[in-house]
Each structure stands twice: as structure tokens, then as C-alpha cells.
Picture 1: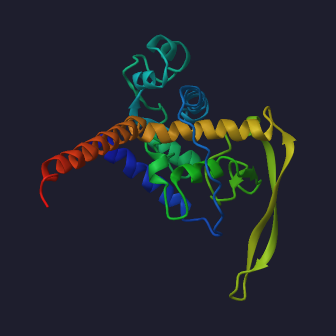
Picture 2: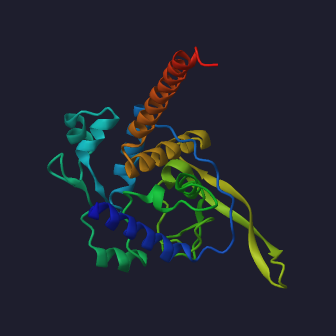
Length: 252
């Protein structure tokens, strides 16, 4: 529990510190979450290959990936790049001080990022799904990248080779108070990536599904138990009603 609380606090602090720079509200796209084993395994592969080099997931252990249909041997052979034992946590070797110096802020732990980023505008999954698809080239940024819903983000676009290189086209609009704001007109792919737009969107959906599952691995089991409890209570309600009729059938 203390580890979970610590991870949540780190994620919230990191996102609050960077997200405060966002200026214009952008509608979030609905994340097409999929919790079948194939989608979660694909998301785990993307997470470990592209995200785990900077972001840890200290509340998750490698052997918990057996819950999405992988064997411990498959985990050792294909996914264990930051640990020696399958029961170890998903941590990174990068020092906190180095990360802060390189990126401006230490990359947050992603154990519960999908839950930490939820807001009144949409779920954390919706935010992550939109965020990972809205990077664009910006030479004024140290990393060379910026993000529509996270202006001034320190994180580079680690999936750009998959998505391709996007540029943003902005227009000036009246902010209603006599000033001007930059409004996104469109994003344009100027250099195609290894994936088509649909393939990239699907892969991001798999990644977000895995991040959502990782924040609460027991989610699907909990939902299943809930339906079982409702079914049992429904049967008991019918039996109780039949018993009442039997007891009161001769009472006028």
C-alpha cells in the first residue's frame, strides 16, 4: 500500500508540475481500451521497449505479466531488460538527479498514471491516448518536440519512428478578452513512419490499455466478481419472493 501511495504521489506531482503549462483546452479522444491478452501483451512490449528506459513502474513486478497470458520464460527471454529476477520491480537505472537535469523534471513513475491523470474532462486513458498521438516537431524545444495537449512538455516523442513526423499548423484567434491565442488548425504528417495512421492508433490503444491494466491488474477480476454477486443476489431475490408467496398464500 505504501508503494502504491508513493507511486501515485510521484505521478501526480510530475504531471501537475508539467501540465500547469497547458494553455488551451483540447477535446480528448475516447481511448478504445482492449483488455484481451493479445492487446495487453502488445502494449507491454511497447511499454518496455519505448517507455521503461526513462519511466519506471515500481508498483509492478515482471512476474505479474503472467496474468496477461505470458509464461515466466517468455518474460525472461523477451521483456526483462532492467532486472535479473522475474520477481523484481519494473524500475529504471537512470538517477533522479540526472533525469531532472536532462528533461527539466524527472519522468514520473507510470504504475498508476492512467488513474492519476483522470479528470473531469475525461478518463486518464483518454488523456494518454490523445497525448501519445499529438506530438509535433518544434525546434524551439530542447528535445525538438512539443505536444498539443501538453505544451512545453519535456518528454521527446519516443514513438515518432512508428507514427512519423508531424508538424502543427496554428492560427491566431481572439481569446474573448482582447488578446490573441494560438489555436491548433491541424496536424500534418510530413514524414511517414513505419506504421499507417490506423496501425499507430491501434498500437497506442494497446499501450494505453496496458497502462490502465497496470494501474489495477485486478480490475477485470473485480468486474467479474461484481457480475457474479449481482447474479447470486438476483437468484436469492426470486427465491425470497417465492418463499414469501408460499408463507402468505393462506392469509387473506
